[in-house]
Length: 209
Image (tube, rainbow, N blue to C red):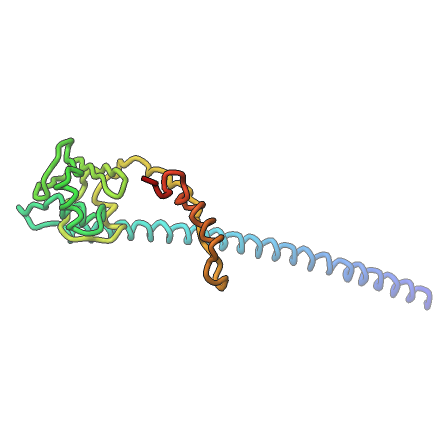
């Protein structure tokens, strides 16, 4: 009887061990499933954030353009009012001052549709304005006529820029620059400075009668 009981107890213990051994497997599967579910949720959230960020950037650009157009419309002249060409090229920041615009017109440096114009010429939408100023030629087509000076972003909405690229700047090494604290230059230093500046050329010397 004792042996039978032991056998029965041994069978029950084996079954218990099998159940115990099976539990971790079940828990592990659930954990893996939960982990996969968490990963999927995290990926989806990340994708949503990226999409939201991209949408915000696009809307910001759109709002900026809309603001620039609104400011340009506010700077437009009243109905039936004309705008002088010297005032327009100043308003869209092609020249720094209105006086510079008038001077450029009087000097023949401003052309509208290929013809030289006076400062009082009334500019219209669609006109091609050519301006030569500060050693550069600007070619723009009028998109909006404004009578007030605006910022650079708003000014860019008022014309189509067909200007050629600016000429490259010549790289000129500075001549005659001394370090601070070295004191006044000696006669030898002055001769070297004059030689670097090109003042000691054969034609610059004193002429004898």
